[in-house]
Length: 152
Ligand code: SF4
Image 1: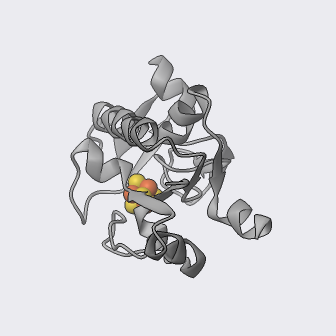
Image 2: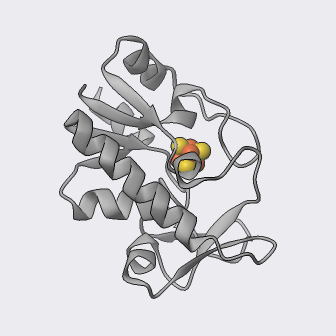
């Protein structure tokens, strides 16, 4: 197995609002058994649909360091579930010995270069989601669906 990919990019309707973010090239990788799909938020214990959440006080790296939190729009602190999902995803990466991980840009779990800024106002900041930060810290190559397309 070469790739680990965000489930929503492969067409699974697992986003917070019950939709997918289908990318046909990524779906093809799964169909050809070159990629395994993972959704860190479902692995962390969430179901779909769920409240939107954003990182407050930093980025995914800061969440892992304990200096930022992931908070739902309604105010519930869901940091622990995000961290759990990140570690579960890491376990899959290790188990399958993947060489590249393609995750959905802007998500508080999967964002690779930018995430929403914590104000629920559709503003983004530079930085990774919690899962991307953990996987990179462990030495994995993590790219977005946009970078994946550029590589084709
Ligand atoms: Fe997609 Fe990642 Fe959000 Fe799951 S956690 S819905 S895979 S962006």
